[in-house]
Length: 101
Image (tube, rainbow, N blue to C red; front, side):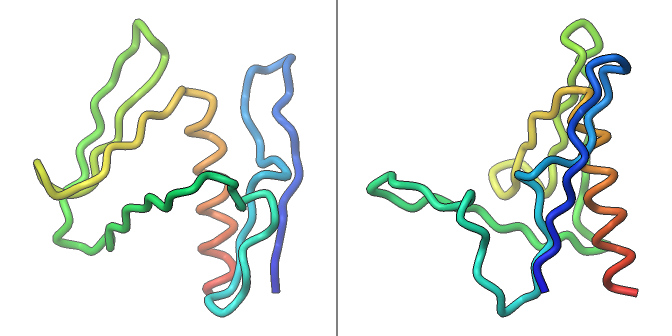
């Protein structure tokens, strides 16, 4: 069952909510159409987050963002996140956790 949560960011508070670009799908489901791309190449990186996987968050307060590094040097993924998008990730991951319970 695909769940698309739609709660656009409110400009008044500057906080991000989930948008129609956010979706939670089951393992066997096809991704929603908005995730399709016409590029003639495929690039993807997967990291399994486990208890022993290092996670480093580097703050850039002057730029109002953070870099979340998952994994180790030369074997990980860096996620560059503006402050308002941190809230979006928290909401999406919380909804995901609730579906898994």
